[in-house]
Length: 151
Image (cartoon, rainbow, N blue to C red; front, side, top):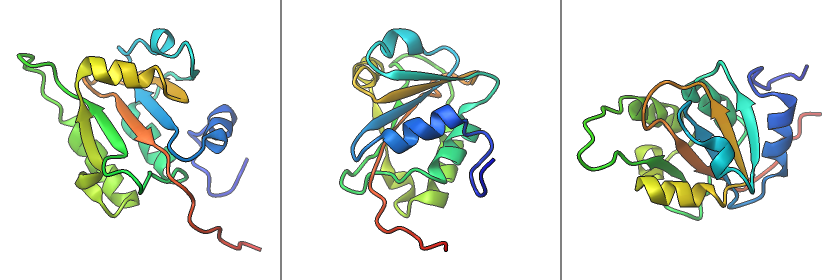
């Protein structure tokens, strides 16, 4: 056990988050996302039984978003003509506001197949059991500006 680390972040996931460098991307995927297919060149971590919002919240407590890009957070856009509602995006934006001063401005969209192509170059994919549609989110890692002296 570690102090101050959200319990939902497994040792495997913490290791991957630590290994990631500036500009590396992480995808938190919903339950319908083809994580294993898209992740042939990535590390795929299973977080079955959990939804995207709780994973996103825990990760952003320890994971800086890239400040050198305007939109370090990308959402999979709804396919034109699809009538699916995406209230989960508002949940994501509320979470992001807690950890990044840019708030909604840090969030952009990618067309579905562009999102898939970007995912193929991601460092890691977290496969969740999220049931919401279009609930996939991609995070681009930034730098830790300063280290706290906790001694």
